[in-house]
Image 1 (spheres, one colour):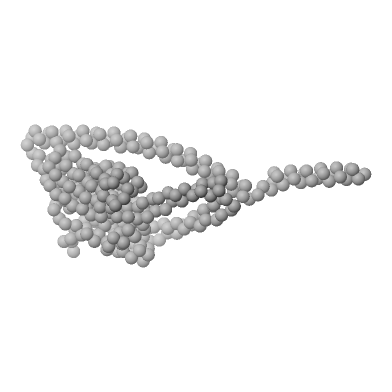
Image 2 (tube, rainbow, N blue to C red; image 1 turned 90 degrees about the vertical axis):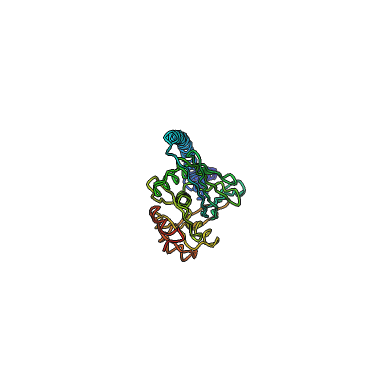
Length: 307
């Protein structure tokens, strides 16, 4: 009888252990599997974006080559007709940019990436000299994002705004920073590059107390950008008094990230809150902000003789 009781107790114990193993896994193990699934999903998305970036880069190179060919052809035709005249000019203005730094943190058996962003100012200059209608870009030191596409659009819009052809001139943009900035977003300097090109063509000085961020399209519209708060802080620290930002960035989303540690695993929770950009930046950073929708809006604030 005693042996039967022992056997029954042993069977019950095994059954209970099996139940706990299947249905009562620790919360940490469940969260760990969830994180593994999220990492795998992010990796797949990252691979897709990498392939898309490669495809876009090839298309950009092809378009740039075609653009260079047509510029050379225009130069040849205008040279043959005797209608080509080159102009000269120069202008410069500081542009806000964002440095993104990625730190890999070693925490026991796991590694995690900590991404931080900081604003900085870069010097953007343009020189227009007699030439063959080329648009050239040089960065010092070398930077990770190509500015060529933004430079081509800036030159096109500046010619349209001023009614001046640069077919007989070379337009040379110089982007200078105190340190190498691999994450500078070239397109976000498009509005500023357009502005300084207009200044160089017309010989009209710019207000050094202002700066602008925003993309530019062929019709002169200013598009949205990221890192507004970091850029505003950099502009304020450099002594700028007015920061022009895209109308499309009127609503600003601020992320608040809280980290919770469970053993060797760090779980990040992100809460977002939306503010009106002008009010938030003026109150938190201390620099005046105005919205701009197109290059004409930028011009209204940028030149020293503008009332």
